[in-house]
Length: 263
Image (cartoon, rainbow, N blue to C red; front, side, top):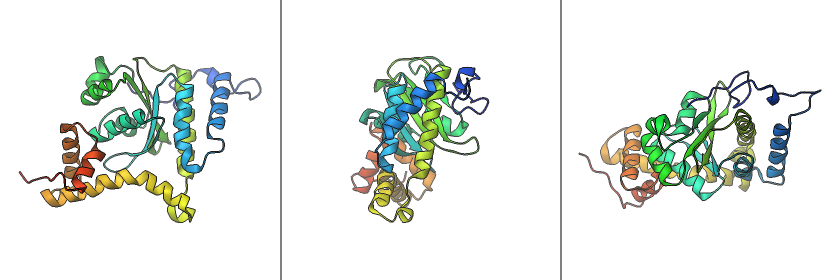
């Protein structure tokens, strides 16, 4: 199910007046609680730690069991951080398949709420992802775009161990966390801008797994004589066939434990 924001409210699916400032500019209690939790969650954090802290805040504020954040990229998303190893694994499932609510949110530029992956239209829309997610104990996924109406730069993905949706107020809180996440990610130092080990650590922390995948894609291109898209598709198919993530499959290719042959 796709929920398109209205009235310019980030992530809100309706015009509930309680979402707005009222009574002389005072925030409603839910928004105040959310902004306070965000401020507490990131207080004292190094810039590169902020995305992970915000994932943890999302789990604190919302009826979800995990959260992850990924940046949009050609071919496959770049996983930035997650609230837990389990949430990170679920993000890798979507990256491996190239399908799921995260990808749909990037394409639609609007929040996507998969409220029941066990049956119905959500299970039918992403059948393979739904099967793998439910096998990992997840019953619902909510993907909130990062960025603006003009440009989606990634997604905040929220996972829950039971079916169900988010209320308008909860979706508004998710949009608030996503907005702060966008600002935090766009403010992080990039290599030459940082001029320090911190900047290099930020880049290497994001790019490590992503670079391994594309190194493997390059090797598969040479082995099969195909383009990058076809090579990535073959790598994803191999990962799925062997029950591993695309990153794990890429490492096998790089280590020469796996070689692709022309058909």
